[in-house]
Amino acid sequence: MKTKLKIILTLTVGLLSIISAFAQKPKPCSLTLQGDKLIGKCEEGIFTNLEINLGKEYVAIDSLTLFKALPKEGSVTLFGQKKVPTRFEITKRSGVPQVILKPDKNTPRVGWYTFDNPIFNNNTINFIIDMDPIVPIQKEDLEVILQTRKLLKDPSKWHQNDDRICDDDIENGKYSFYCALNTASTMVAGEYNHRNAVMQIMRKQIQKRYPPGKKWRHRFKDYNNMPETSFKDIINIIDEAETIIRKELEKKSN
Image 1 (cartoon, rainbow, N blue to C red):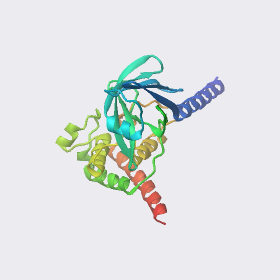
Image 2 (cartoon, rainbow, N blue to C red; image 1 turned 120 degrees about the vertical axis):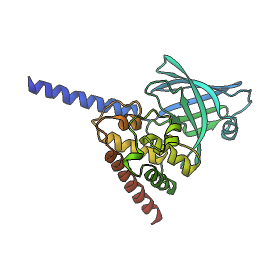
Image 3 (cartoon, one colour; image 1 turned 180 degrees about the vertical axis):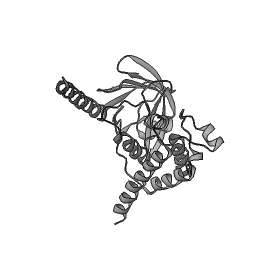
Image 4 (cartoon, rainbow, N blue to C red; image 1 turned 45 degrees about the vertical axis):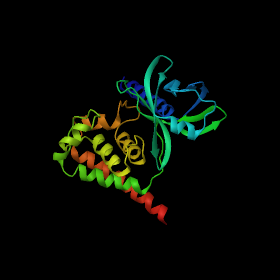
């Protein structure tokens, strides 16, 4: 009986790993200009349909036109079923402007994602949505780490009740893990990028601590609020991320 149970558990963990790996693969997507809208879909994954309301009609679309038109409201359809109000904005990642989609904050298990590797062809935009991108590291990322350390300089500056709303954290001078990173990113770069190199490295460090297939709604929020997470655990992740970033910057300088 114990042997059978062990086999079932092993197969279950393996299956969850496969599902998790598949979910992280980049998803090919496209948008086509139709009057005053960009309408399209992704081949697979979370977002089956996308729509951006441009506010006026365009005869052609290219990167400059799109970047000037945003931010705009629109929608994404999740798994071909639920249509969710979504804001489309411009952000910068590693110094490069990108379109980022931000579904309504009350939508469970859906984060913010960027349009990666966009190709503009006539009135069509082809791109991928990478659910967990590897982002090039730059000097600014180290500055974000150092600023995060200043905000979380001792346990009295950390709290374990993250709601991903950071205004009160800033006002009280007491931060969740996510809000410390969010605030530090804004202080250093002038804006917050949800999937900059620092955030991505730390997401992976959090994920490494748990079995494959563990479900997260928001990795920073969930990890921060877990009863077993300590201030030392948060600092350990910051230490690991700083080591990775310093090593990568050293390689680039040689």
